[in-house]
Every structure is written in structure tokens, then in C-alpha cells.
Amino acid sequence: MDTLKDVFDFRDFSKVEQVVLVLFSLFLLVFPWLEAGSFVKVVMIQFLLFSLFGMGWNTIGGYGGQVELGKAQYVGIGAYSVALMMVWWKIPFWVSMPIGVLIAIGYSFIIGYPLFRLKGHYFAIATICTSLVLQDIFINWKLVGAAKGIELPIRDHPDFLYMQFKSDTYYFYFIMALFYVGIFYMNWFRKSKLGYQLRMIKEDEEAAESLGINARWCKIKAYSIASAFVAVGGGFLAVYNLYIDPYSVMDLDLSIKIALMSMLGGAGSMWGPIIGSAFLVPLDRFLGSWLGAQKGLIGVDFMIYAALIMIVSAYQPRGIWGIIEQFRKRGA
Amino acid sequence: MIVLDALLQGILMGLLFALVALGLTIIFGMMDIVNFAHGEFLMIGMYTTYWTSLLLHIDPLITLPASAIVGMLLGLASYYCLVKYLLRGPMIAQLFGTFGLMLFLRYLAQFLFGTDYRIIQKGLLVGKSLSLGPFIIDWTKLSTAILSLLAFILVYYLLHRTKLGKALRATALNKEAAAYMGIRTDRMNALAWAIGGGTVGIAGGLLVNFWYVYPTIGLVFVMIAFASVAMGGFGSIKGAFFAGVIVGMIELLFPVFGYLIGWDFLGPHFKFTLVYFAYFIIVVLRPQGLFGWTR
Image (cartoon, rainbow over all chains, first blue to last red; front, side, top):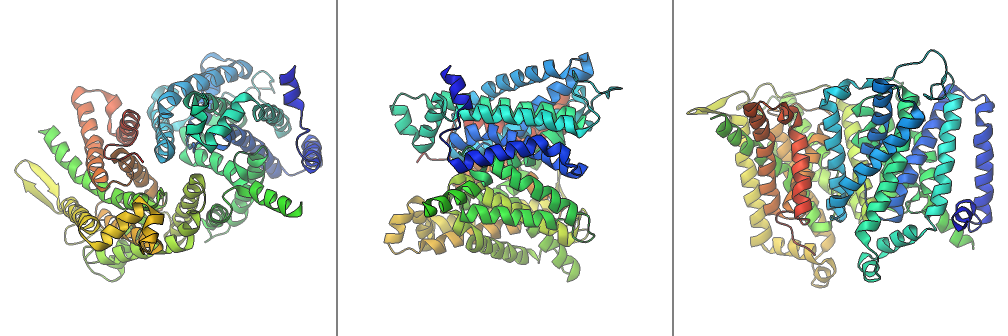
């Protein structure tokens, strides 16, 4: 009962945050009826997907303070398990996605156990390495389509079991539902025992251990939670794109984007990952479609994007949420 | 025979990797920053040698100082414009700050030079090889290896035998104490970036003699450099040297073993995977790297 209360209880947020959350939810609900262009819809779906990834990353990277740069491997595991089970055995999405998440959790324990012996930069680079190893294996593994990737069989008519729809609206509502599950879970997580333990570890690992917290085990648990989140998003990516290859779902760029968005929004805060992806996904997309289409300006959109990353990391390492809190403190 | 040949080639390649890793480890040792843009410094070093030798019609070997100077200036510029400010933030902000720099330089190169693959076609050493009995060694690779050894000896001498090196090491060990002793730590940091950029610029200038240059080349090398630096222990010069050579040998020996055993899994397309895997194993067994020290 207490757990349920924690999940739905947003009362400890300020009035402004509550109002913004309600308005934002209403906006999301009516968004498909606003007659927005299909490009805007795609951007919105991307935004929700990356918020989900970011919320997952936030458990280990934000609350736990571990610089984790290998989340793409779990996107890949989620996406590949959905795609492969559908291609090989025609297993519906609703069965294959949970199996994919379980595989991701199991894999994250296997990887996480040795990984969390490491600290600091050694850890950060080791996470990149594990992700790259898995990507290389998938690029060369003929059974799973190697570098060509896998195309999901397209069904004749829209099918709820296999999550194939004609219109983006359904996908939008589906990813929105996942997004809210994520929000409610995070709302519980930040008040849970593990959440407090992780924040303690982030502040001072030795002090946490002296209080009887098993730091390594806590980090592994948070890591597998993060992996589960990301694997769900990966499963969605497979049915949404209907095509996956190791370069699109397991790339280092994807890992870094996930961590970057959370950090830019404000790691370790409830809304940070959402703000970060609300900011970066549209920026990335619109800059790309606006500048990328013009001749002779190839790459300029990424240069602006990169300059922004540099400026934020240099001047406000706590991200956009840090800036907001600064203003709030000044106002109070 | 084929094994010995691969071993030799691996050592030559490894010395190049070590030269790339040298700058990274100096920068890390000084201020605990992992420079994601290091591979992009390499790429710019490559482009510098390529364009100067092409446009001025001089031998690529003579343009090496140009690459070194461009690398140094780049290092200095990134220190004074970006890294100085990043140092105040947490580790993750530092990582992403240099990551932003990496993206910026990569797409700047793409904007300026396009995505074409370029390589130096003619030069004093290009395409010529030395045959030593059964072994055939490319002159370009041999000169790279020799220069890499020279660079290591010079940097080692600088760090351990000169007053400047003493100041550098003091800053690396304890910044505040060094500042109290009258060492201008800000300048020492900048110097580390200049040395780091300069050595990687030279590496780039040598590499373009036998490796294609394109805007995204940096990523391949920066990951190998990361793995070798971490394998050797962050901040350790000796570590970077030996780990670089080990990485080079892994990269070339395992495909040969795979070929001899007839086991496709160890084929050449997995060579970098094995490097990452070796890094993972070494670091898990010895979390401070081969030559690292625990703080």
C-alpha cells in the first residue's frame, strides 16, 4: 500500500512543477489531434523514447553518479530479441518484449558484476568497451543478419499483438504509456531505499560502505534497472522502425546521446532527462532538417549541436535543471 | 614464420598506437581528464600533413613539424577555451565537454574537406619497403616506429630529468601544493595539452603515409588509445608504451592464430573487439591498469 502511495504521490514537488506536469500530460493526450505534421509526430515519438532511455540512465548515472556510457548495448538486446523472435518463431511483441527485458537484466548482471569493480574513468571506458564488443559481435554474426540487419515481416493489416499500425498515432500513445510507466516508476524509485542508498554512494562511497551499504551490489541493481528501461525502449524501436541493424541500435553515438541528454537536462533529478530530451531531440532533428538540406552546409548542424554541448558542460555542469534551480533559489 | 612476421608488424603498429596514447596519458596524468577529442587531434594532424605536402609539393616527412605545431596550437586552444572551464565541473561534465569538442572538430573537418578518403600518394618513403631476410617492412611503418620511440624517450627525459618535468609531475601529484611552491599550475596544464597535441599531431602526420584519412577516423583510434591508456594505467607513460605495443600485437597476432587454427571467430574483423575484450579482462583483474598507481 505504501508502495502504491509512493508511486502516485507527487505532493513533495512544488506547485509549479505539479501544474506543469498536469498541463504537459494534457498536451500529450491531445497532441495527436492537433493536426501536427508527420515530421513533428516523429520528433515527439523520438522525444518520448529518449526520455524513457534517459530515465533509465538516470537511475545509475544520475542518482548513482556512475558515468555509464554503454547503454546502447541494451537498446540492441531489447530490439534484437523482439525482432528475432518475431522473424524466427512469430512470437508476438507482448511476449517477446518482456523476454528481451529479462535477457537484458540477466546480461546486465553478468556484465555488471565485474564492471563495478572499476571506478571513475576505468569504469566509463569499460562500459564503452563492452558495448563496442557486443556491437562488433552482432555486426559479424551471420545468424542475426550481421551488418545488414533484420527486417521485420510486415503484416497485412494492423495488428495489436505484433504492434504494427498504419498510423503513428498508435505508436505515439504506446510510447506515451511507457513514458508514464517510467515516470511513475522513477517517482517511486527516488523515494525507495535503493534510491537513497545510491545518492549516499554518489556523495561518499566510503562513508556509505561504513554504514553497511553494499555499494557494489546497489550499483549492480541500479544498473540492471537502467538496462531494463532501455531494453523496453529498444523493443519499441524494433516494432516502430520495422528494421534494425547493429549500427542504428548499438552505436556508441546512441550510448553517448542517452547519457548526454540526461546530463544536459540535469542528472540525478526527476525531470532532468525529460527536459534534456525535450531540448536536444527537437534541436537535433530540426537543425538537421533545416541546415542538412542546404548544400555546402553539411555538418554545420552538428557543429552547432557540439558547441552547445561544450558551452553547457563548461558553464553549468548540473544541466538545464541546475540553471532552473539556481533561478529558483535566487527568487526565494 | 607467419607468426613472427605478424609479431613484428604488430610491434611496429603498436608503437604507433603508443604514440597516439602518449598524448592522452600525459593529459590524463596532469588533470584527470579523458580527452575524447584526442582522435580528432590525430585526424587534424593527418589532414595537416596531407594538405601541406600536397599544396606545397614537399615531402610528407618534412611537413611533420607543421603537424606537430598545429597539434600543439590545437591543444593549447582547447585548453584555454574549453578545458580550463571544464576542470571546475564533475567528471561527467568533463567527459561530455571533450566529447562536444570531438563532434565539433569532426564535423568541422567534414565541412571543410568533405567525406572523401584521402591518402598520401607519393613521398620519400611511401610505398617502399625494406626486406630483411624473410621479413618485409614498410619504410613508413618503420620510420613511424622509430619516431615513436624517440618521442617516448624525449617525453620521458623531459618529465624525469628536467626542472620543467619536475614541475609538471608536482602539478600532477598535488595541484594545490604545487601552487604553493610557486609553480604556475595553469601553465603546466597548458603545457601538458601542448605536448599531448604535439605528439598526436606527429602521429597523425606519420599515419597518413599509410592510412586513409577521413573525418570520422578519430573514433577508431581514440577507442584504441583509450583502451591502451587504461590498460597501462591512466597517467603512466611507461604503461602507455607497453600497452600500446600489446594492443598492436593483439590486433595482428590473433587474426593469424585464427587463420592457423582455421577458426573464423578470431578473424581480422574482430581485431578491435579483441582489444576491447583484453582491456576489459586486464582492468577487471587489475583495476588500476598494468602500471597505474592507486591514489
